[in-house]
Image (cartoon, rainbow, N blue to C red; front, side):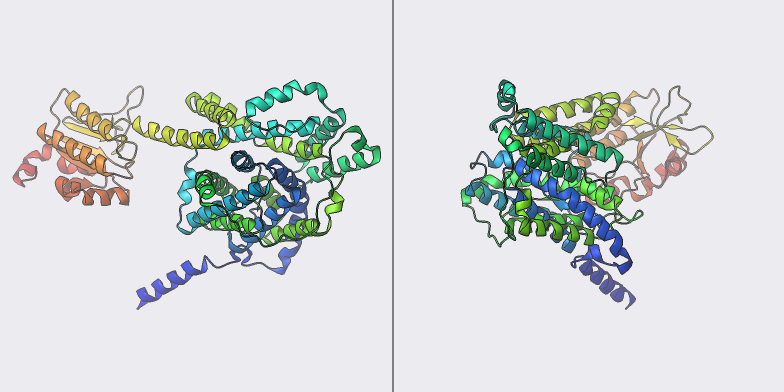
Length: 579
C-alpha cells in the first residue's frame, strides 16, 4: 500500500512539473519591488536591442517588439527559470535571415511568411525536445566550436551593419563580396552617420563597464535621436527609421507550401540545436536557486513555446538571451513577473508610441549591434584555448571560417559536425594502460614518472579510461592483448579495472569477448573490478559477458580480485573447475 501511495505521489509530482506558471510559483508580494525594478531595467535594455535585432534580420522594428512579447509571455507560462529572458536574439537572427534570403526577397510578404513558418518549426522541435527530455542535445557543441560559431556570427553582424554605420547603401549577397563592396564605397562615408553610430557604441560600451544595469543602448539611442532633431541631420543624409505603425500584434496563421516547408526543415533543425545550446548554457549560468539543478528540459519547453507564439504573431524565432538574463538577475528580479512587466512596456510602446521612434537614426541601431558583435567574441576563450589546447584552437578557426565563407546554415552544420568528430576522435585515441600498485596500499594507479609503483608477479591490471564503443573497440582489444603478450613472465591473472567504462555497445562487447578468449588461451584468468556504471553492468548481462566471466570473477575492487584469484589461488581455482 505504501508503494502504491508513493507511486501515485511521484506521478502527481511528474504531472505538476508541467503545469503553467512554474516560474511564478512561490511568488510573494514582497518580491514585487525587485521584479518591478528588474522589469523596468529589462525593458530599457530590450527596446533598442529588439529593434536592432529585427533590423538585422530584415524585419520592421515592431516585429522585434512582438517577438520579445511572445517570448517573454510564453516562457513565463511554461518555463522554469525565474530570471531567463527570451526574445529576438542576434545569435540566431543572422542564421535564418541569410538562409531565408536565398528563398525569398528580404522583407517581402513571402519572406515574412517563411520566417513565421520557420519559427513554428523551431518552436515545435525545441518544445518536443524538452517534453521528451532531450537536454543532452545541448552538449553537441564543444566550447571551441561554440566560440568559433559565435565569432563567425559576430563577423556577419559587423559586415551587415557597416553600411548603416557608415551611411552607405545596404549590401546583400555573400559576406566576402559585401566586404569588398563596402571597402570600395568607403569614400562615400557619411561622417554624421559614422559619428552617431560610434557615439552610441561608445555609450553602450562605457555603460556596461560601469554597470550592466545602466541602459546604455537606450541612452545612446535617445541622445542620437535628439541630435538628429536638434541639428537637422536628416538634411545631411542621415537615414532614420521613420514613424512605426501603432497597433497590437494580430493573430497570424503561418502558411507555406510543401516545398517551402521541406526547404525549411533542415534550417529549423540547425537553429533548434543552437537555441537549445544557448538556452541550456543560460539556464545553468543563472539557476533560479544557487544550490538547485536547473530544469533545462522545462526551459526548452518555455523557449520553444515562445517561438510558436511568435509565429502566431507573424514574427520570427526567439532564443534565450544571456545578457538580458544577467540584467534580470543583477537587478534583483525574483520571478518571471519581471519579464512580463518588460513585455507590457514594450507592447505599449509598439501599440501607442510608434511616432516616438520616427527620428531614430539607422546608425544608432548599427552601433548597438556593433556592440553586440564585439560582446559575443570570446577573446579570453580564444587566448585560453590557444595556450592550452592548440588542436582545439584549430577548431575555432575552422568553424569561424566556415560560418563566414560558406552559407551560414552550412557553416553551422560544419561546426556541429566538427564538434561531433572531435568527440569521436578523442574517444578513439584512448589506449588501455597497465596500472601499478601504490606501495603500502591497495590502490592501483596509472604509472607515474619516475615510476614509484609496483607490479605483482603473474598479475596484469589493465584500465581503459573511456566508454567502450565501436569507435575504440578494436584499439581496446589490441591494446589489452598486446599488454598480455608483452609481459616477460606468464600472466596468470588479468584484471580489467573498469571504473571509467560507463557504457558498452554491441561492437565493443564482441571485442571484450575476444579479449577474454585471448587471455584464457594465454593461460590467464580474466576478472573485472570496479565496474560501477549500471548501464555497463546491464550490458555485461545482456551480451552474456557476465556469464562468460562468471559472477565470482566480478569484484568491487582490484585488491579483492587479486586476493581471490591471484597466482597463489590457482590451484584452488582449478579444483573448483573455474576456467
